[in-house]
Image 1 (cartoon, one colour):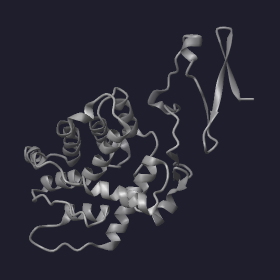
Image 2 (spheres, one colour):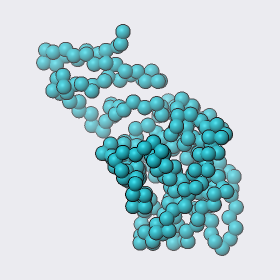
Image 3 (spheres, rainbow, N blue to C red):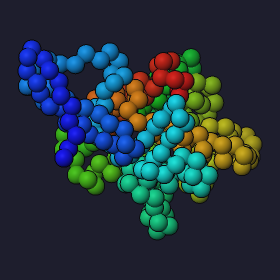
Image 4 (cartoon, one colour):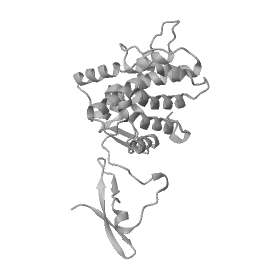
Length: 269
């Protein structure tokens, strides 16, 4: 028999279903509360509210537990690359070698950005914050890919937009940084792995040979994995809220970048 909780209001008792998560955490389902009682809940900051069911991430900051799709973060950080973890988060399982090769090939095919984005970047003053530039450029992708704003996208079309974002964000982020310091933009090199390519675009110069530091590459790969998903935090909730209006993926993620920019997000920016 399903577990329930009873709530008595104005002499009337109603049953609230109790739902249990994969880690045995429990919640009251109040989806019908207003219809049955006329009442709503008051929860400032949504500290006691779960907005959706998700099988992606489990996080317990107090206990130091972080799992993606059931995998402990320690295992993923030690044995996987960021792109493998991205595949896991998106599609639900770690890729086989063939699946990873195909996924990486897709990513490398979309790492370049339109040359007109350089013109947009050149319009920002060097004092502009890289996060503000990043949010603006991500949102501008809707202009370069107008089909992305269609209210109904096929699975293939949505997947293409996801791949584009993962592929282009390192280029956009690196160029945003280069703009802020007044250095020339560096184009991606697809023979490099994802993390090495990002570091190359961030810190190389056309006047000298850039040598990768394997310790830095490994550290950044682990940082990207650790920050890949943190449940329904502020920026994730922002992306979901904007996306719920059928806004484009690029517009929704741009809103999330602005949320991440906020100093109360925990310093993740």
